[in-house]
Amino acid sequence: MNVLSQCWAVLAKDILLDLRGSSRLTAVLFFAMMTLLLFSFGSEPDPESMRRHAAGYLWLALLLSSVLALGESFRSEVEDEALEGLRLLPVDPRALFYGKALSNTLFLLVLATILLPLSLGLYGAEVRGSLTSLIGFIILGTAGLAAPGCLYAAMTSQARGQDVLLPLLLFPLVVPVLIACVKGTGLCLSGDAMGQASSLLSVVATFDLVYWSVCGLLFGKVIDE
Amino acid sequence: MAIKAPALQAENLARGYGDRWALSGLNLELAQGRSLLLAGANGAGKTTTLRLLATTLQPSEGSLRVFGVDSRHDPMTVRRHIALLTHRTQLYNELTASENLQVSARLMGLRRDSNRIPALLERVGLSSRSNDRARSFSAGMRKRLAFARLLLQDPQIILLDEPYGQLDPEGFVFVDNLVAQLLEEGRTLVLSTHLLERASSMLDSGLLLCAGRMAWVGPAKDLPTAFAATVSS
Image (cartoon, rainbow over all chains, first blue to last red; front, top):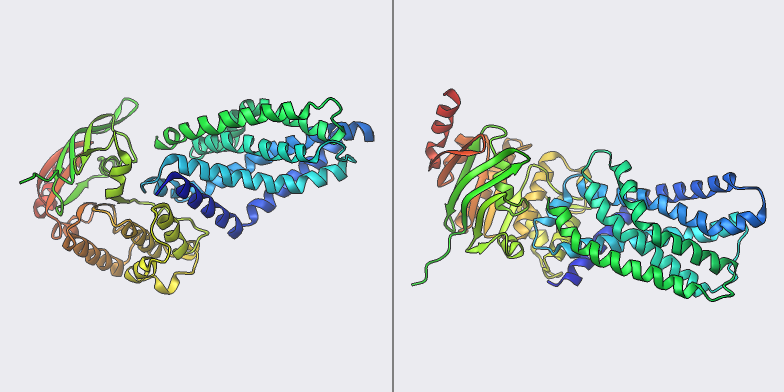
Protein backbone atom coordinates (compact mmCIF):
# COMPACT_ATOMS: atom_id res chain seq x y z
CA MET A 1 0.00 0.00 0.00
CA ASN A 2 1.70 3.22 -1.07
CA VAL A 3 1.45 6.66 0.52
CA LEU A 4 -0.74 7.95 -2.32
CA SER A 5 -3.41 5.27 -1.84
CA GLN A 6 -3.40 5.80 1.92
CA CYS A 7 -3.64 9.55 1.40
CA TRP A 8 -6.65 9.01 -0.86
CA ALA A 9 -8.27 6.81 1.80
CA VAL A 10 -7.89 9.57 4.43
CA LEU A 11 -9.25 12.17 1.99
CA ALA A 12 -12.24 9.95 1.11
CA LYS A 13 -12.95 9.42 4.81
CA ASP A 14 -12.87 13.16 5.52
CA ILE A 15 -15.15 13.96 2.57
CA LEU A 16 -17.61 11.31 3.80
CA LEU A 17 -17.51 12.79 7.30
CA ASP A 18 -18.15 16.27 5.88
CA LEU A 19 -21.07 15.02 3.82
CA ARG A 20 -22.52 13.23 6.87
CA GLY A 21 -22.27 16.14 9.25
CA SER A 22 -22.94 19.14 7.04
CA SER A 23 -22.99 21.27 10.20
CA ARG A 24 -19.29 22.11 9.78
CA LEU A 25 -19.81 23.77 6.39
CA THR A 26 -23.02 25.49 7.51
CA ALA A 27 -21.49 26.86 10.72
CA VAL A 28 -18.24 28.00 9.09
CA LEU A 29 -20.08 29.52 6.14
CA PHE A 30 -22.38 31.56 8.38
CA PHE A 31 -19.40 32.70 10.44
CA ALA A 32 -17.56 33.78 7.28
CA MET A 33 -20.61 35.63 5.94
CA MET A 34 -21.07 37.41 9.26
CA THR A 35 -17.40 38.39 9.22
CA LEU A 36 -17.71 39.83 5.71
CA LEU A 37 -20.79 41.76 6.75
CA LEU A 38 -19.16 43.10 9.93
CA PHE A 39 -16.10 44.26 7.99
CA SER A 40 -18.37 46.33 5.77
CA PHE A 41 -19.76 48.04 8.88
CA GLY A 42 -16.23 48.83 10.04
CA SER A 43 -15.15 50.62 6.87
CA GLU A 44 -16.19 54.02 5.57
CA PRO A 45 -19.53 54.04 3.71
CA ASP A 46 -17.70 55.00 0.57
CA PRO A 47 -18.11 52.63 -2.43
CA GLU A 48 -14.55 53.20 -3.64
CA SER A 49 -13.04 52.42 -0.24
CA MET A 50 -15.20 49.28 0.04
CA ARG A 51 -14.08 48.10 -3.41
CA ARG A 52 -10.42 48.75 -2.55
CA HIS A 53 -10.60 46.68 0.60
CA ALA A 54 -12.73 43.82 -0.81
CA ALA A 55 -9.75 41.49 -1.35
CA GLY A 56 -8.41 42.09 2.17
CA TYR A 57 -11.80 41.44 3.77
CA LEU A 58 -12.29 38.27 1.72
CA TRP A 59 -8.94 36.81 2.82
CA LEU A 60 -9.41 37.83 6.46
CA ALA A 61 -12.81 36.14 6.46
CA LEU A 62 -11.18 33.02 4.96
CA LEU A 63 -8.34 33.10 7.50
CA LEU A 64 -10.66 33.43 10.50
CA SER A 65 -12.99 30.75 9.13
CA SER A 66 -10.09 28.40 8.48
CA VAL A 67 -9.36 28.30 12.22
CA LEU A 68 -12.91 27.13 12.91
CA ALA A 69 -12.84 24.64 10.03
CA LEU A 70 -9.49 23.15 11.03
CA GLY A 71 -10.48 22.86 14.68
CA GLU A 72 -13.70 21.05 13.70
CA SER A 73 -11.82 18.79 11.30
CA PHE A 74 -9.60 17.51 14.12
CA ARG A 75 -12.40 17.35 16.69
CA SER A 76 -13.73 14.22 14.98
CA GLU A 77 -10.21 12.78 15.11
CA VAL A 78 -9.78 13.23 18.86
CA GLU A 79 -13.40 12.80 20.01
CA ASP A 80 -12.94 9.05 20.50
CA GLU A 81 -9.19 8.93 19.80
CA ALA A 82 -9.92 7.97 16.18
CA LEU A 83 -6.60 9.42 15.01
CA GLU A 84 -4.82 7.21 17.54
CA GLY A 85 -6.69 4.29 15.97
CA LEU A 86 -5.31 5.23 12.53
CA ARG A 87 -1.81 5.47 13.98
CA LEU A 88 -2.09 1.89 15.23
CA LEU A 89 -2.44 0.77 11.62
CA PRO A 90 0.65 0.47 9.42
CA VAL A 91 -0.10 3.85 7.86
CA ASP A 92 2.55 6.34 6.78
CA PRO A 93 2.08 9.55 8.84
CA ARG A 94 2.65 11.55 5.65
CA ALA A 95 -0.47 9.94 4.18
CA LEU A 96 -2.46 11.05 7.23
CA PHE A 97 -1.14 14.59 6.86
CA TYR A 98 -1.60 14.96 3.12
CA GLY A 99 -5.06 13.39 3.29
CA LYS A 100 -6.14 15.82 6.02
CA ALA A 101 -4.45 18.81 4.34
CA LEU A 102 -6.10 18.03 1.00
CA SER A 103 -9.54 17.62 2.55
CA ASN A 104 -9.18 20.94 4.38
CA THR A 105 -7.94 22.65 1.21
CA LEU A 106 -11.04 21.35 -0.57
CA PHE A 107 -13.24 22.56 2.27
CA LEU A 108 -11.69 26.05 2.16
CA LEU A 109 -11.97 26.08 -1.64
CA VAL A 110 -15.71 25.40 -1.40
CA LEU A 111 -15.97 28.14 1.21
CA ALA A 112 -13.98 30.59 -0.94
CA THR A 113 -16.11 29.75 -3.99
CA ILE A 114 -19.20 30.81 -2.06
CA LEU A 115 -17.59 33.82 -0.37
CA LEU A 116 -16.00 35.33 -3.50
CA PRO A 117 -19.22 36.27 -5.34
CA LEU A 118 -20.75 37.30 -2.01
CA SER A 119 -17.91 39.70 -1.25
CA LEU A 120 -17.97 41.06 -4.80
CA GLY A 121 -21.67 41.82 -4.39
CA LEU A 122 -21.36 43.15 -0.86
CA TYR A 123 -18.47 45.51 -1.57
CA GLY A 124 -19.51 46.41 -5.12
CA ALA A 125 -16.29 45.02 -6.64
CA GLU A 126 -15.81 43.24 -9.95
CA VAL A 127 -13.11 41.21 -11.67
CA ARG A 128 -11.30 43.69 -13.95
CA GLY A 129 -8.05 41.71 -14.11
CA SER A 130 -7.32 38.09 -14.90
CA LEU A 131 -9.92 35.56 -13.74
CA THR A 132 -7.37 32.76 -14.14
CA SER A 133 -4.98 34.50 -11.74
CA LEU A 134 -7.83 35.05 -9.29
CA ILE A 135 -8.63 31.32 -9.36
CA GLY A 136 -4.91 30.66 -8.89
CA PHE A 137 -4.77 32.87 -5.79
CA ILE A 138 -7.84 31.17 -4.35
CA ILE A 139 -6.45 27.65 -4.90
CA LEU A 140 -2.88 28.37 -3.77
CA GLY A 141 -3.99 30.64 -0.93
CA THR A 142 -6.37 28.09 0.59
CA ALA A 143 -3.67 25.42 0.24
CA GLY A 144 -1.29 27.78 2.03
CA LEU A 145 -3.70 28.08 4.95
CA ALA A 146 -4.61 24.37 5.09
CA ALA A 147 -1.15 22.78 5.30
CA PRO A 148 0.29 24.62 8.33
CA GLY A 149 -3.24 24.76 9.75
CA CYS A 150 -3.44 20.94 9.75
CA LEU A 151 -0.07 20.62 11.44
CA TYR A 152 -0.96 23.07 14.20
CA ALA A 153 -4.52 21.74 14.56
CA ALA A 154 -3.07 18.25 15.12
CA MET A 155 -0.57 19.70 17.60
CA THR A 156 -3.18 21.60 19.59
CA SER A 157 -6.13 19.21 19.16
CA GLN A 158 -5.61 17.61 22.56
CA ALA A 159 -4.36 20.72 24.33
CA ARG A 160 -6.43 22.79 26.68
CA GLY A 161 -7.32 26.11 25.07
CA GLN A 162 -7.04 24.76 21.54
CA ASP A 163 -9.29 27.51 20.24
CA VAL A 164 -6.80 30.13 21.41
CA LEU A 165 -3.59 28.24 20.65
CA LEU A 166 -4.38 27.41 17.03
CA PRO A 167 -4.74 31.01 15.77
CA LEU A 168 -1.79 32.11 17.91
CA LEU A 169 0.44 29.59 16.17
CA LEU A 170 -1.09 29.74 12.70
CA PHE A 171 -1.56 33.45 12.04
CA PRO A 172 2.11 34.54 12.26
CA LEU A 173 3.18 31.68 10.00
CA VAL A 174 0.73 32.41 7.18
CA VAL A 175 1.32 36.18 7.08
CA PRO A 176 3.47 36.03 3.89
CA VAL A 177 0.84 33.99 2.02
CA LEU A 178 -1.92 36.23 3.31
CA ILE A 179 -0.18 39.45 2.21
CA ALA A 180 0.59 38.03 -1.25
CA CYS A 181 -2.97 36.74 -1.67
CA VAL A 182 -4.53 40.05 -0.58
CA LYS A 183 -2.33 42.05 -2.95
CA GLY A 184 -2.76 39.54 -5.80
CA THR A 185 -6.52 39.24 -5.41
CA GLY A 186 -6.74 43.05 -5.20
CA LEU A 187 -4.92 43.30 -8.54
CA CYS A 188 -7.26 40.72 -10.09
CA LEU A 189 -10.25 42.78 -8.94
CA SER A 190 -9.02 46.27 -9.74
CA GLY A 191 -7.02 45.46 -12.87
CA ASP A 192 -3.37 44.44 -13.17
CA ALA A 193 -1.87 47.05 -15.50
CA MET A 194 1.74 46.26 -14.49
CA GLY A 195 1.31 42.46 -14.67
CA GLN A 196 2.36 41.93 -11.05
CA ALA A 197 -0.11 39.14 -10.28
CA SER A 198 2.03 36.37 -11.77
CA SER A 199 5.03 37.21 -9.58
CA LEU A 200 2.77 37.29 -6.51
CA LEU A 201 1.37 33.90 -7.56
CA SER A 202 4.95 32.59 -7.63
CA VAL A 203 5.48 33.89 -4.10
CA VAL A 204 2.38 32.05 -2.84
CA ALA A 205 3.37 28.89 -4.75
CA THR A 206 6.85 28.97 -3.19
CA PHE A 207 5.47 29.31 0.33
CA ASP A 208 3.00 26.49 -0.41
CA LEU A 209 5.85 24.27 -1.51
CA VAL A 210 7.73 24.97 1.73
CA TYR A 211 4.63 24.53 3.94
CA TRP A 212 3.46 21.31 2.29
CA SER A 213 6.88 19.67 2.36
CA VAL A 214 8.01 20.77 5.84
CA CYS A 215 4.63 20.15 7.50
CA GLY A 216 4.42 16.72 5.84
CA LEU A 217 7.77 15.80 7.35
CA LEU A 218 6.93 17.16 10.81
CA PHE A 219 3.44 15.67 11.09
CA GLY A 220 4.69 12.21 12.12
CA LYS A 221 6.68 13.72 15.00
CA VAL A 222 3.73 15.85 16.09
CA ILE A 223 1.26 12.97 16.36
CA ASP A 224 3.83 10.55 17.77
CA GLU A 225 3.93 12.23 21.16
CA MET B 1 17.37 -25.42 12.21
CA ALA B 2 16.64 -21.70 12.31
CA ILE B 3 15.73 -20.22 15.68
CA LYS B 4 12.51 -18.23 15.42
CA ALA B 5 12.65 -14.75 16.97
CA PRO B 6 10.25 -14.20 19.88
CA ALA B 7 6.99 -12.47 19.03
CA LEU B 8 7.70 -9.83 21.68
CA GLN B 9 11.02 -9.09 23.30
CA ALA B 10 11.35 -6.06 25.58
CA GLU B 11 14.66 -5.26 27.24
CA ASN B 12 14.82 -2.78 30.08
CA LEU B 13 11.88 -0.89 28.56
CA ALA B 14 11.09 2.36 30.34
CA ARG B 15 8.90 5.39 29.82
CA GLY B 16 9.09 8.61 31.76
CA TYR B 17 6.95 11.74 31.85
CA GLY B 18 9.08 14.64 33.04
CA ASP B 19 10.82 13.37 36.17
CA ARG B 20 8.22 10.64 36.83
CA TRP B 21 8.68 7.10 35.54
CA ALA B 22 5.40 5.53 34.43
CA LEU B 23 7.27 2.32 33.66
CA SER B 24 10.85 1.22 34.18
CA GLY B 25 12.99 -1.88 33.77
CA LEU B 26 10.45 -3.98 31.89
CA ASN B 27 11.98 -7.20 30.59
CA LEU B 28 9.65 -9.44 28.68
CA GLU B 29 9.88 -12.27 26.19
CA LEU B 30 6.85 -13.89 24.65
CA ALA B 31 7.03 -16.61 22.01
CA GLN B 32 4.55 -16.75 19.16
CA GLY B 33 1.24 -18.28 20.23
CA ARG B 34 1.83 -17.61 23.92
CA SER B 35 -0.27 -15.32 26.09
CA LEU B 36 0.39 -12.97 28.98
CA LEU B 37 -1.94 -11.59 31.61
CA LEU B 38 -0.94 -8.12 32.74
CA ALA B 39 -2.14 -7.00 36.17
CA GLY B 40 -1.63 -4.15 38.56
CA ALA B 41 -3.46 -1.47 40.46
CA ASN B 42 -4.66 1.66 38.65
CA GLY B 43 -1.64 3.70 37.58
CA ALA B 44 0.72 0.72 37.85
CA GLY B 45 1.80 1.13 34.21
CA LYS B 46 -0.37 -1.42 32.38
CA THR B 47 -1.65 0.95 29.69
CA THR B 48 1.82 2.49 29.27
CA THR B 49 3.23 -1.02 28.76
CA LEU B 50 0.63 -1.85 26.12
CA ARG B 51 1.13 1.45 24.30
CA LEU B 52 4.88 0.90 24.27
CA LEU B 53 4.38 -2.61 22.89
CA ALA B 54 2.02 -1.20 20.24
CA THR B 55 4.66 1.45 19.32
CA THR B 56 2.24 4.35 19.72
CA LEU B 57 4.42 5.47 22.61
CA GLN B 58 8.17 5.79 22.23
CA PRO B 59 10.28 4.31 25.04
CA SER B 60 12.51 6.68 27.00
CA GLU B 61 14.96 3.80 27.54
CA GLY B 62 15.36 0.20 26.49
CA SER B 63 14.37 -1.63 23.35
CA LEU B 64 11.46 -3.56 21.91
CA ARG B 65 11.76 -6.21 19.21
CA VAL B 66 8.77 -7.71 17.46
CA PHE B 67 9.63 -10.91 15.59
CA GLY B 68 13.21 -9.65 15.72
CA VAL B 69 12.42 -6.21 14.25
CA ASP B 70 13.45 -3.20 16.33
CA SER B 71 10.37 -1.03 16.92
CA ARG B 72 12.39 2.20 16.87
CA HIS B 73 13.99 1.48 13.52
CA ASP B 74 11.00 0.03 11.70
CA PRO B 75 7.71 0.88 13.44
CA MET B 76 5.67 0.35 10.25
CA THR B 77 6.75 -3.30 9.97
CA VAL B 78 6.07 -3.78 13.66
CA ARG B 79 2.56 -2.31 13.32
CA ARG B 80 1.76 -4.83 10.60
CA HIS B 81 2.06 -7.54 13.25
CA ILE B 82 0.40 -5.78 16.20
CA ALA B 83 -3.09 -4.56 17.02
CA LEU B 84 -4.16 -2.83 20.22
CA LEU B 85 -7.62 -2.49 21.70
CA THR B 86 -7.61 0.49 24.05
CA HIS B 87 -10.07 1.88 26.61
CA ARG B 88 -11.43 4.18 23.90
CA THR B 89 -13.06 2.59 20.88
CA GLN B 90 -11.35 4.94 18.37
CA LEU B 91 -14.36 5.11 16.06
CA TYR B 92 -15.74 7.86 13.86
CA ASN B 93 -19.13 8.52 15.39
CA GLU B 94 -20.72 9.87 12.20
CA LEU B 95 -19.73 6.84 10.14
CA THR B 96 -21.66 3.57 10.14
CA ALA B 97 -20.24 0.35 11.57
CA SER B 98 -19.45 -0.86 8.07
CA GLU B 99 -17.86 2.45 7.02
CA ASN B 100 -15.67 2.52 10.12
CA LEU B 101 -14.24 -0.84 9.10
CA GLN B 102 -13.95 0.24 5.46
CA VAL B 103 -11.76 3.21 6.48
CA SER B 104 -9.32 0.85 8.17
CA ALA B 105 -9.54 -1.66 5.31
CA ARG B 106 -8.72 1.00 2.71
CA LEU B 107 -5.79 2.30 4.74
CA MET B 108 -4.42 -1.23 4.99
CA GLY B 109 -4.94 -1.80 1.27
CA LEU B 110 -7.43 -4.65 1.65
CA ARG B 111 -9.36 -5.61 -1.44
CA ARG B 112 -12.59 -3.69 -1.92
CA ASP B 113 -14.62 -6.75 -2.90
CA SER B 114 -13.53 -8.59 0.22
CA ASN B 115 -16.29 -10.23 2.25
CA ARG B 116 -14.30 -9.78 5.40
CA ILE B 117 -16.22 -6.78 6.69
CA PRO B 118 -19.70 -8.41 6.67
CA ALA B 119 -18.14 -11.59 8.07
CA LEU B 120 -16.44 -9.67 10.89
CA LEU B 121 -19.62 -7.77 11.75
CA GLU B 122 -21.39 -11.13 11.90
CA ARG B 123 -18.64 -12.49 14.14
CA VAL B 124 -19.05 -9.67 16.67
CA GLY B 125 -22.85 -9.78 16.50
CA LEU B 126 -23.38 -6.46 14.71
CA SER B 127 -24.44 -7.57 11.24
CA SER B 128 -27.98 -6.25 11.73
CA ARG B 129 -26.56 -2.81 12.67
CA SER B 130 -23.91 -2.55 9.93
CA ASN B 131 -25.55 0.51 8.36
CA ASP B 132 -26.18 2.35 11.62
CA ARG B 133 -23.93 5.17 12.74
CA ALA B 134 -21.50 4.41 15.56
CA ARG B 135 -22.97 7.37 17.49
CA SER B 136 -26.21 5.41 17.98
CA PHE B 137 -24.42 2.39 19.50
CA SER B 138 -24.32 1.46 23.18
CA ALA B 139 -20.93 1.27 24.91
CA GLY B 140 -20.94 -2.51 24.57
CA MET B 141 -21.75 -2.38 20.85
CA ARG B 142 -18.97 0.15 20.30
CA LYS B 143 -16.57 -2.21 22.01
CA ARG B 144 -17.70 -5.06 19.75
CA LEU B 145 -17.14 -2.87 16.70
CA ALA B 146 -13.67 -2.01 17.99
CA PHE B 147 -13.01 -5.75 18.26
CA ALA B 148 -14.13 -6.17 14.64
CA ARG B 149 -11.64 -3.51 13.52
CA LEU B 150 -8.90 -5.21 15.49
CA LEU B 151 -9.68 -8.54 13.82
CA LEU B 152 -9.73 -6.84 10.41
CA GLN B 153 -6.03 -6.15 10.86
CA ASP B 154 -5.45 -9.91 11.18
CA PRO B 155 -2.53 -9.29 13.53
CA GLN B 156 -0.13 -11.91 14.88
CA ILE B 157 0.10 -10.09 18.21
CA ILE B 158 -3.00 -8.79 19.95
CA LEU B 159 -2.89 -6.38 22.87
CA LEU B 160 -6.10 -5.97 24.82
CA ASP B 161 -6.41 -3.17 27.38
CA GLU B 162 -9.38 -3.85 29.69
CA PRO B 163 -11.37 -5.77 27.04
CA TYR B 164 -14.17 -6.47 29.55
CA GLY B 165 -14.70 -2.78 30.27
CA GLN B 166 -18.21 -1.44 29.48
CA LEU B 167 -19.52 -4.92 28.63
CA ASP B 168 -22.49 -6.76 30.13
CA PRO B 169 -22.30 -10.43 31.25
CA GLU B 170 -23.12 -11.54 27.71
CA GLY B 171 -20.26 -9.36 26.51
CA PHE B 172 -17.90 -11.02 29.02
CA VAL B 173 -18.69 -14.40 27.45
CA PHE B 174 -18.16 -12.88 24.00
CA VAL B 175 -14.65 -11.72 25.00
CA ASP B 176 -13.85 -15.07 26.65
CA ASN B 177 -14.83 -16.95 23.49
CA LEU B 178 -12.94 -14.54 21.27
CA VAL B 179 -9.77 -14.81 23.37
CA ALA B 180 -10.02 -18.61 23.28
CA GLN B 181 -10.42 -18.53 19.48
CA LEU B 182 -7.49 -16.17 19.01
CA LEU B 183 -5.25 -18.41 21.11
CA GLU B 184 -6.40 -21.46 19.18
CA GLU B 185 -5.43 -19.67 15.99
CA GLY B 186 -1.90 -19.39 17.39
CA ARG B 187 -1.86 -15.64 17.95
CA THR B 188 0.22 -14.02 20.65
CA LEU B 189 -1.89 -12.19 23.19
CA VAL B 190 -1.27 -9.71 25.99
CA LEU B 191 -4.34 -8.91 28.05
CA SER B 192 -4.62 -6.34 30.80
CA THR B 193 -7.57 -6.52 33.16
CA HIS B 194 -8.72 -6.23 36.76
CA LEU B 195 -10.86 -9.37 36.32
CA LEU B 196 -7.95 -11.64 37.14
CA GLU B 197 -9.93 -14.74 38.15
CA ARG B 198 -11.76 -14.65 34.84
CA ALA B 199 -8.72 -14.16 32.60
CA SER B 200 -6.10 -16.19 34.49
CA SER B 201 -7.62 -19.56 33.53
CA MET B 202 -7.29 -18.76 29.80
CA LEU B 203 -3.76 -17.36 29.60
CA ASP B 204 -0.27 -18.84 29.99
CA SER B 205 1.83 -16.46 32.05
CA GLY B 206 1.25 -13.50 34.32
CA LEU B 207 3.04 -10.26 35.03
CA LEU B 208 2.22 -8.03 37.98
CA LEU B 209 3.19 -4.39 37.78
CA CYS B 210 3.52 -2.22 40.85
CA ALA B 211 4.28 1.51 40.59
CA GLY B 212 5.72 1.06 37.11
CA ARG B 213 8.01 -1.85 37.99
CA MET B 214 7.79 -5.61 37.55
CA ALA B 215 6.64 -6.96 40.92
CA TRP B 216 5.93 -10.60 40.05
CA VAL B 217 6.26 -12.97 37.10
CA GLY B 218 4.85 -16.48 36.96
CA PRO B 219 2.06 -18.67 35.64
CA ALA B 220 -1.17 -16.76 34.97
CA LYS B 221 -3.17 -19.08 37.23
CA ASP B 222 -1.11 -17.91 40.24
CA LEU B 223 -1.48 -14.22 39.44
CA PRO B 224 -4.69 -13.58 41.44
CA THR B 225 -2.99 -14.90 44.58
CA ALA B 226 0.17 -12.90 43.91
CA PHE B 227 -1.90 -9.78 43.32
CA ALA B 228 -3.89 -10.31 46.54
CA ALA B 229 -0.62 -10.77 48.48
CA THR B 230 0.79 -7.54 47.02
CA VAL B 231 -2.35 -5.60 47.90
CA SER B 232 -2.47 -6.94 51.48
CA SER B 233 1.22 -6.18 52.04
